[in-house]
Length: 126
Image 1 (spheres, helix red, strand yellow):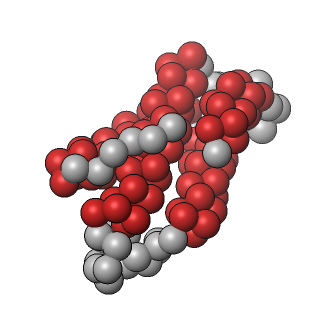
Image 2: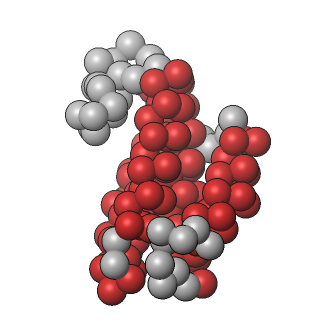
Image 3: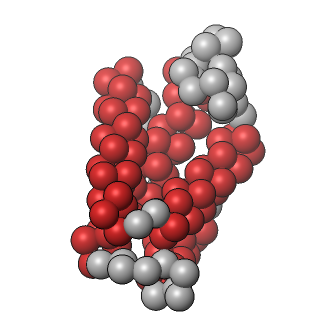
């Protein structure tokens, strides 16, 4: 999984930034996208740990209704890949004047999710 994460971060983000359909992309946008993708990866790993180790018998380890109340590892990995690719695509397709706001809002949401998992004792394992 870490190799897929590194491939996304090191290859896809810069490639998308130079794509013809991704206009007016700046280094600020690249930085914001890297921060979002990193937080999303951390959130996914913390969710897997939390659901497997902290709440193995609970039917409510995840609050996101799109993921399900107790997602397994395979589902979380699939959601991570889909959300990561979708976020990058939306970031590219948005006009530059909206892109920074989109990235800021999604970084705050992911940062909040990461802090919640850390607060309950989930561990990050790369």
